[in-house]
Length: 377
Image 1 (cartoon, one colour):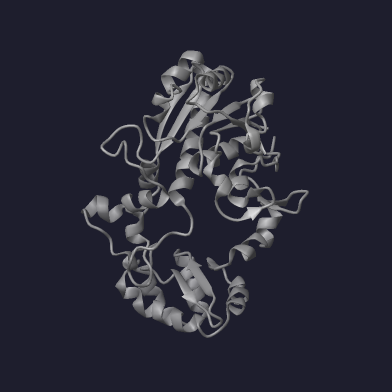
Image 2 (cartoon, one colour):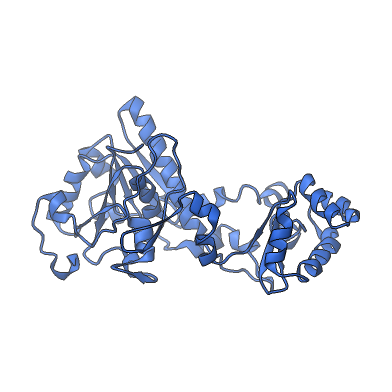
């Protein structure tokens, strides 16, 4: 596997950091999850599935778990000793915490100058928001994303996916891999200061045109990807399900409108998004409400048109395309797991479906007996 032989020390919790290190574990890295005596908060979030929550095992499978109290000198020394043999260090504390704990980059670098040290925080390690706490939704709000994510009432709506967490985790993964690649030439690691806020702004590159070019806030319902185009919208069907049209290229516009006998709408759609497309949107609203979702799904398959039915999560997990790609796997206890989306032709991932119990690897990794009591179990 691509990352076999890489050792990762993971002090992160919740989602961005664990999502980053999950990808590394899936592709062969040894990820040592360092948890405080109470454990990662994800262990108690969401639905319980066997011995762990689905949330926790979805982002921590295949890792090892040790428990260290970094306020104790002896445990801090254990961590620093581990860093001497590590390649990557990931933490997601508020800025300043690792310094107070004496496990900041400079301290770790002194033990191992080859280490790649990644800090993920809401706003980064400098700036006026340095000490400000924030999770995904607040970052989405402050980045402007919620200003164009609107419900039918025109008010900001909570996205169904914690996009700031996921995007920052992916940016962190990219940064870590770049630093490891560069280390091959220089022999030295690096420090990565990764901000969720920065990551979200970076993810908005395709919707920032009006703000950058004209200094104005766009009207979301008139823009290309947020409701202003008939061929990029969600429509209700007769059975109260939903269908998306999701491709605005000329060929898709012509294919569908010609098949419907409404070539008179083509020019309106080719003029781009905006209020002038209202007649086309109204037509589609009425059209798709006339038949159930299954009818439209089958009918549209015969055309070269970008579309997708709005599926529930159970439907999505049973989708034959997802299953064909091996994205849903089942362990020996019948529990489903989400596999890696990174498919290599050579050295593919070998997913380890084991979810670590809190502190289960402490003694094996550190060689020290620790009085964890019931917390280990």
